[in-house]
Length: 412
Image (tube, rainbow, N blue to C red; front, side, top):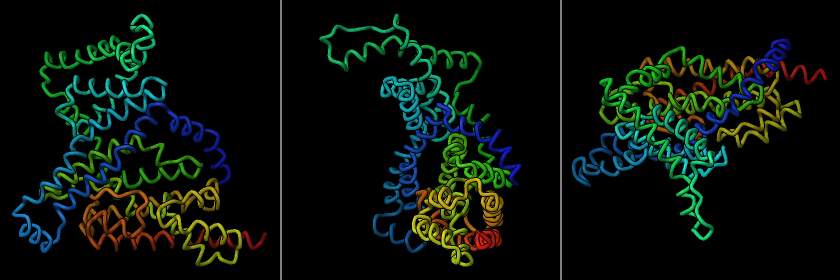
């Protein structure tokens, strides 16, 4: 095990660290972080309209008129999920421009304009998400480089207001950037492609989303997150740019299917991971805390750190355990911390696939307490039962390894 850790530290950790600090990935991650509260709000609107309780539906129909009351929930959904790609491209342009110390607001405006010039008006929702990411990165890169060319920048006299001066400085770089983007729809029109966004969605994005609906994903996704965390790298943040491109459209598709009365097509998404896998935080560390309370209280150092970490762990904040216990680079905890969440994910996936639990469709805050998250994500008490089962399973997984740690500490 020590040799394995040494090899990973030497070859894997430097690559992962560089990946986590890569400019584009950081900008994409931060863009999705900004949109997350809106996605939660949009899910709340869908929940209001589709809550599967006949008494509630009858009450709302009788009180406000048949189906008229759903206008409120539809408005919330249209203003959040309905413009998700638009919000993403604006936030991406802003964050990427900020990383270059350029005028971030102008970069955001140019990114949005480039998205529409490219044909993004047909994919304002999650269908246009990949196109939004491409437009946000390329337009900002092009605009920043053109802005650094002094021959293309119009300098106004000193008496001109700063806002007006900035607008004229960005005039030619903006015009050139948008003109270049406008060439793509022109070429596509001659090639017989009338709708770039939907064509790209069918060709690339939709098959890519299929990764969230198979057993392979249930194994690879939690493993990748946990292996990064074990070496002290924030697995969720590093992989967020990749995962959100799968999760966000999958959540949107699930909500649309639910609103239409159809089964959710994508099972493994962010609500799924929050409700059934990241119990107490990445690695299901609330299971570790309970295991220590059961068999490790006689070791003062373990007991003290665990007692201090337990309250935060109820809200999925587990950095005190990861770095204070520590879990990072702890060879004894490598197996339960890395492979335990894989087992939880596979169990939850199989239970959902078998129809024992409804698919997770409600977007949750990441700090929702365990078990409660299972009920809310699935809108069913069976989701709470599955979350509780996984919680107990996590304790069982950690228990023998905690006993080994206790024996070692007592020998010392």
